[in-house]
Image 1 (cartoon, helix red, strand yellow):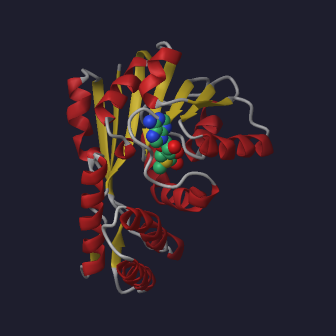
Image 2: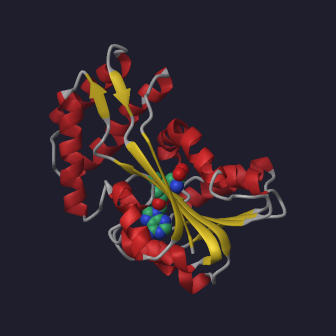
Image 3: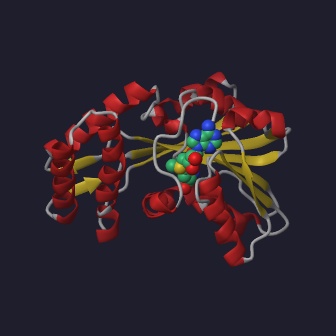
Length: 268
Ligand SMILES: C[S@@+](CC[C@H](N)C(=O)[O-])C[C@H]1O[C@@H](n2cnc3c(N)ncnc32)[C@H](O)[C@@H]1O
């Protein structure tokens, strides 16, 4: 990767968390894409595909007359996708190991839909990346992006540990030069890139199911490890955060909201 290492874990270790997060947001993401022109036979690029949760969904939608190019800079993520494809006997998903900043060196204007989700927040140059995404779209192709505003996880009654986590996320983002609330800025970026027919949806899921509430535990385990690595907290504070996130997830008296997700689509 040419601009900073991906901050979270990759591979099997993060698969469950990633799948759970995808599951929480899936009803909103799939509906939005369906309403933004995805059709059978199309050629889709899923950029920053991770273990390929969305690539597999796209594969179903476009069918074998179409294709899904699943792009990620991590071989570990792509290896998980490859074994999932093998076990399902899917041949129209093409995994490609590439850095987003290099996309236009490898692809021409060839995709009907270029998609990314939960991806730009990890990059140090997200605007440069969006520019690359646009460059590989066909004329009239549709760019579709879904990103969270990670500072909007919420509980009522309010909880000081959740607030502490948000403060720590802010500090980590500053240290790493990443933007964990890029979702709300996407409209401005789409306008600057002169994309047309812009469509936006904002969703904030309520975490009702036990499994979805338990995402909070995986979230603090994953990001908490990074707070430790960057010495933003010590081991005792990590344990305290973890225990209180467990209590928050399991206590059904708390209304828990996932972070606000901004979805945007625009035509090239
Ligand atoms: C949170 S995961 C994305 C998950 C996936 N989009 C989904 O919706 O399930 C972020 C992915 O971005 C990849 N990544 C990070 N920096 C990248 C870069 N510069 N170019 C391509 N992929 C990158 C990571 O390897 C990781 O798999």
